[in-house]
Amino acid sequence: MSAVATDVVPVGAARRAVAVGVFFLLAAAMIVFVFGLGVPGGVSSTFVLNPVQGGAIHVPNLTLPSRASALAIGAVCAALGVVQLVRGFGRRTNLAIGVVVTLFVVAFLTWAAHDKSFNLVGMLQSTLLLAVPITFGALSGVLCERSAVINVGIEGMLLAGAFVGTVVASVAGGASGAHILGGTPGEWLGLVGGAVVGALLAALLAVLSIRYLVDQIIAGVAINIIALGLTSYLSIAFLEQNNALNAPGIFRDVKIPGLAQVPIVGPVLFDQNLFVYLMLVLVAVAYIALFHTRWGLRVRAVGEHPRAADTVGIRVLYTRYRNVILGGIVAGIGGAFFTLGSVGRFDENMTAGRGFIGLAAMIFGRWNPVGAFLAALVFGFADALSTKLSILSVPIDSNFLLMAPYLVTIAVVAGVVRKARPPAADGKPYVKE
Image 1: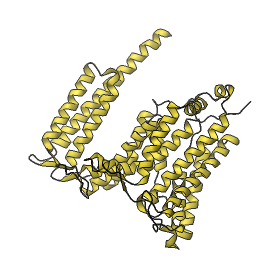
Image 2 (image 1 turned 90 degrees about the vertical axis):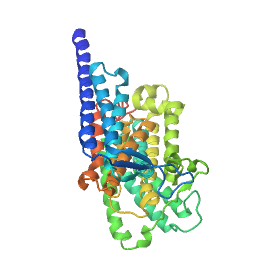
Image 3 (image 1 turned 120 degrees about the horizontal axis):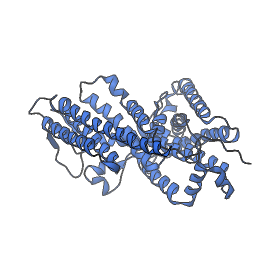
Image 4 (image 1 turned 45 degrees about the horizontal axis):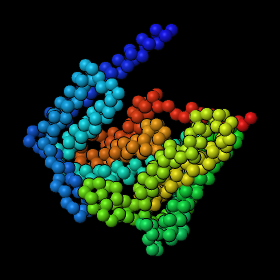
């Protein structure tokens, strides 16, 4: 039996190495023949490195020869493919994959922007903003699943947070009043309202799945259906009849003095609204709390081996209740972003599956807050890219561009879910003896 096992592993590894090498060569071929030879010679791609409204320090635009750049990138990818097939990259294979994917994106952008200009800073700003609700959803999932409770109801919590945040902010005065960190008192109350309704829905999920041992997937789906049905009905019955209830205002951007003037990075990271800063803080706090504190050690113990955690005095059920509700608060804040941080009004089903994409980001990030945030940036980039390409009039069907974020979600889940290992007790109810 041992001889068979030792033979299987190298064969599987060899097949993966060959598949990765072939992938590199196919990417190189597409870059050369589509992105390189597919554009006329003599044209350039211009990447604007300044924000649309201008910055304190002007950075010269980056202009690249479209065809030559694509051919050079294709040659690099082909060389990496040959190295992978001949001897492989070993433990650095994932790094090599990341390099090839990044080069492919650069070549694609060079092709899309040939004989045109492409605002790279605006693209990065859009990526970060579009990643905000996905990151909040992913963080909600991390907090819940690290304590072994699957939260499929994130989509419903986002939607409810958007609705309640709108109504509360509108009733409290919306955009009127003095601004505190970019938000009026009414907008701040709307943010709190979104967090509260997220906590209430999370508490419902916790009671159903922890107290009454309802299947956690079914409980989460039920919350999504309830949130979608209620918000749609209330929106038609009240918001459409009274526009004053759908005018919450939007948090203004807050510039961080000094840092906001840094070229490229400054406008992207340090000239944003409250939700972006809150997202970055929550990612850092969640990471430190989960992996560098006693609190996080106990949470992870409950997620991995609740029986052993119980025997050493950790309150398993209490920990799960607490983490699920914390996850609901985070999701509710993420939902409030849709209205208070983005469009300034509520529309039916405006979350458009971002809660499910957040779950995919959580898996892609391997249940790690930082990894989930980086994965959310990938999805945000795909979403922002689809919008930018439509503006550039790229010869790609508009319906395909709209599908881009969801296609990336499917590809990521299909490629990662088999390798990612969730907490050992994830989704398993615990009955105290």
